[in-house]
Length: 313
Image 1 (spheres, rainbow, N blue to C red):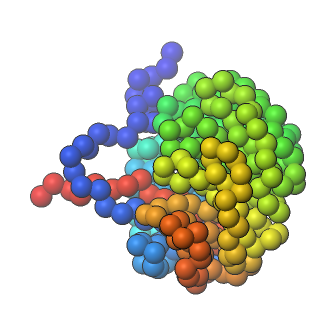
Image 2: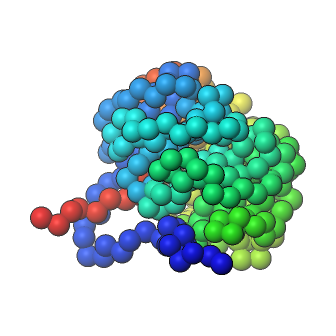
């Protein structure tokens, strides 16, 4: 039996009628052992996070970071200050959090599984077998979980509450990054070794198309209107912009060296340039890089805090 409280973890509280503040972008720098906060296109602060953080996720006002080689998950507050460290036996890489921040999903890269954890103390509540070398994961608003099984060349789909596999969808070679469209009807999958992008229909759990997406697509993000898909090209130092309707190449934008993670917030795209130790800021109106913000060594992953609401006074 599914506990109603567990299902509710995936749903954000309704706060209609309150003004929305701009969201914060968090950047995890692996070699620099730091998380950086970006607000309104500028650096707002830094916080030290020991243990080479690889992937960052947000939920419920908290920031979560995975440490594949340190066998831990860090829980930090909205400033990036560490609150606690959760032990994790596996090599946790991909990371997703429920909207209220109480539940974590962790992909064990070397264990070929995905675990559901309590964010309070790290207790593993349930596990499910994935394909080989699970990389990034995505969690939708209904609690469905998508896992990029890099060396099995597929995306595994799970019911997050039951932790049962719903499908294993063949994609390109070595899927790594995932991004849902705003309406969650499409899942975009970056395939790093076949240099393409697979589009999955989340209703039928079938692949609709696979199209070229530049040299080594390592990160994927979708514009808020769902019209554009942005893909980082690690080996080319570029971002490929695809028209979501036609899947045609709309632009190619030069950024820093070895771009990896990418997110979109407030009319701008933010790109983690692993070898440049910067974050590129792209204006989505002009499709041009407008600046590069310096961050700690080895930025690889970014996440956006859920849009905050102004508190009642």
